[in-house]
Image 1 (cartoon, one colour):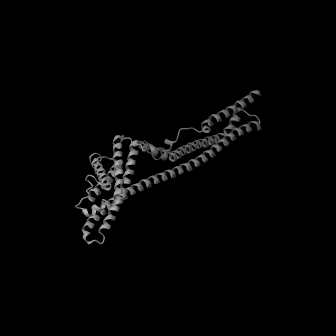
Image 2 (cartoon, one colour):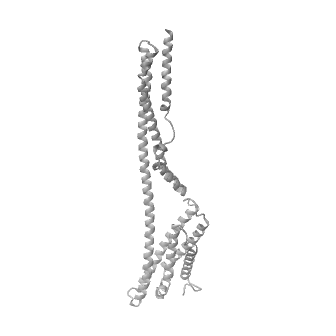
Length: 351
């Protein structure tokens, strides 16, 4: 019985519904979706086109003789595969309709458009798998009907030619998809590994700069204490002299004060460098997970971080801030010298 006739058995009805669903979907794609610029949508639509091509050629008598197709139509595995294809084609059409209603400008991975496109890609994967099942069932039936039957050599050749052509194209498409998935996974892995390594570098740099800042801060503090302590000792251990003599003694501490100021300044620079590196390391460690659901906004954040790391000098990217010891050092030294001068003057006035 012809699958397109009336009062069909279940297998004929199943095949007819699947064939009609795929053909209708393929026509819809040809009218409305071939101009889409989304590569994922185009790739999924190509899978539908390949399925429709197999259906047309499989039941075209000038390519596959009716002696083969009559048996193929009744094969349980072949019919079961087409039942799955029909269901997938219906879901595919519904998803395309939803994508058409979604805002294609919203490329946020967690948004409706990208979610629907990912769903469409999953349906395309299922369709390729189901088409493979149908092809294998078709080949099995052809082999069973024509093996050791010299009267069907020509029919066997034509039928297997169709199956081999579709199977080769299907395998090529599967390899393309696998290569693309591998490329994306490798690109993401390389990016994540590079980000982690760079974050580790900046963490190491921050630790080194922090240690240098601590040592320099300690040196500056020691010199400041030495200046003050030395001045007090000179004042109390030696006989009183004129204010001028006292100031001459204190002038010996000026080089030490300059050195203390230099160390404090260097400590401040290293502290800012450590803070800057720590901020970058934290950003690199947290940014990949943070930007993943942000779509184009995430790409922009990555670009800004790249500019911050590679596009500007460190002194332009370090966060503002001052080292308290360095900022207060001149005032503290001046206060200490003024106090000593006042003390000396008071002693002179009591004489």
